[in-house]
Amino acid sequence: MGFFSTKSFNFLSLITLVFLTGFVLLAYSKSAPDYTTLVYKGCANQTFSDQTGIYSQTLTALFDSLISQSSKTKFFKTSSGGGQTSFTGLYQCRGDLSNGDCYNCVSKLPEISDRMCGKTVAGRIQLYGCYILYELAGFPQISGVQMLYKSCSASQAAGSGFEERRDTAFAAVESGMVSGNGFYTTSYESVYAMAQCEGDLSMADCGECVKTVVQQAQVECGSSISGQIYLHKCYMSYSYYPNGISRKSSSVGTEQNTGKTIAIVVGGAAGVGFGVICLMFIRSLLKKHDDY
Image (cartoon, rainbow, N blue to C red; front, side, top):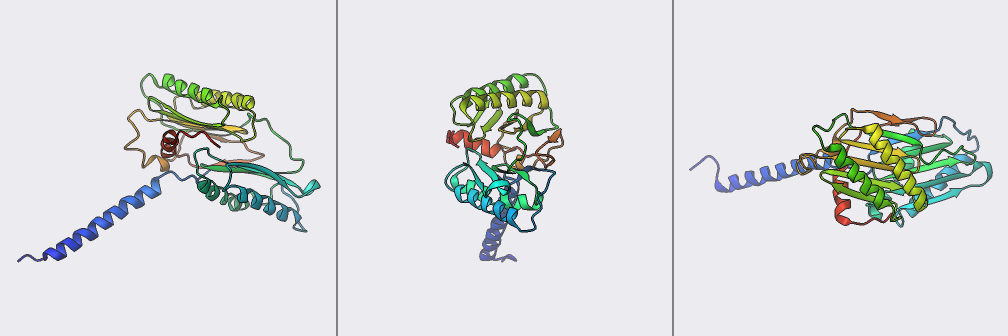
């Protein structure tokens, strides 16, 4: 008779299996892309004096109004207060998020904004899955195609053919946005690309914005295998997987970007690590939905 009985062996095997399964799931959950991960924040240099608390109350009311709509629609713009103490704000979720995910994403934004921007007269918080923008009455406006943030991977495409594949995918994005839905994902020979316009842009303005952001991605990121370019009214991201995505899809979400970054948002901004959201790309391509 051995040291372990059959029952003991089976029990230990079961415990080991459960432990290993849990470990794999934990590793995957930590590495999988998260639509609530911060991409960048931009806060105005000016702050408001709030001795009576009216500005804070108005801004809170604005945020509450935005959150209340986020379970129903993926884009909403409104204002709160009156006169010089009024705030205008909006949120937008990625076109491939469900209404529930949109709500979960947007509901995190006010706390992040308060922590990172405090009592600034304007601010923008961009997560992977959504963003929020608020401005005090009279805040200067900027061009819709002004660059706010860029991130290009340090890894460069090896060999020939990358630029042709990239440009073909980019052309498909430009063409796809003409439909007027404002959100589009595509893939071409291991290049995955996505673009989105702000929800209140006209079809023509969206097309011009996407054309500009595509040109910026080509110039700014060059041969980088992945990149993100955010303009004021639209953004795009792309990823290139020459060896396929099956083995890397569980780890690319935590890959830290060591390439070129820039952040120029309403007076001052800071960017954080860049992770390619390939799983969200795949989900978008499978769903084939182009709704906001």
